[in-house]
Length: 465
Image 1: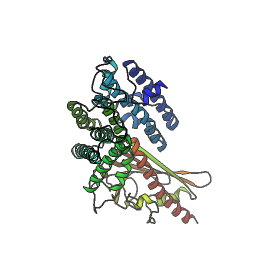
Image 2: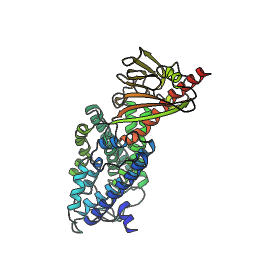
Image 3: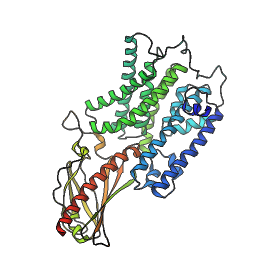
Image 4: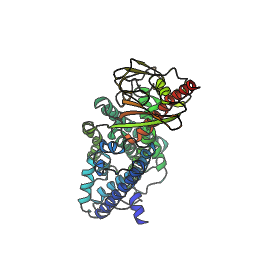
């Protein structure tokens, strides 16, 4: 029971020995979990060096065209390890006589390794110097009430200051990361919402220790306000904001919980410590940009067709108009295929696959009638039309972040005279965390593949009849 409080609580003091023991054991446990998931999904081993690369190069190479469930499993299993890591780092910094806020560097890519190593070697400070106090009197004052203290006006002012300050920080990080460095990275998706939650909690609780539930609401309001500003300014559309909200809201609440605990036990951070905490994410964006190397990913979908390969082939190289899509996400603006035409025959011919947002230009690289059709993608339209109050939203992620590189159709003759048609898309994804966004992207690609393959199946089976 004591270890559970040490790992997941916010009260227990974290000594150097406990920090090292937990770090080593949890690292071994995380490696074991990832190895089991990796072996179950691909039958291969997980490269340990992949943990050292924020760009996920080795992870993408190792996973390859893995099933979508493993991506979600890895994201979910990482959350408790992240919570234990950051909360124990904060308490370890306090135990060493440092500002607890310095422990939040655990969330900063690359710097987190330096932080963990430093905290692992620093000795515990004397009881007088330790900056993490047990629950009880508010630091520097009388007994702190559990419910919001002060009048409604004071609480509202604190909430507004917290929301506005953290929203300003979030918008600044968006401008720096996306429009200066052209990067949707870890500093933006992980560190930014976490520190937004921490900042809002710090400012909301600066006069009185307020209720944790209200503190979490203030953090969620900060994330919602930031998303609303992005939508209002036409930076992003509603659909992508909805996909990003779950991860941003979760991290903001974790940051707010840590900020609330720190304010009630350690008091407000020194200005220098607070400035350092908020400057760390912007300072690492450039490093992330240098290391970012999205790797090629593959998504494959198949269908069995009651027709021989030569019949299926004729509808694979080009197909007629598809009916309107019934799926709700296509109706919300996600690009969907409508028809395909080909100019010429053989290698060098150009196939044009018309989508609702424009055309994919696909020069043929492999032409094996009845067996295989492969092509590169030299031009492609936006992946969606964003839902927005404005007619056109030039969201940066729509171009150059999820990019189709090439595609293949493989026709496999079956013993019963049928054909198994497999469609593959090879793409790169420059959005962090890739494992989270790939869940959405790969499900959409499967839906697009299914729409095309089912249409080819219907055309081919009608011809045979």
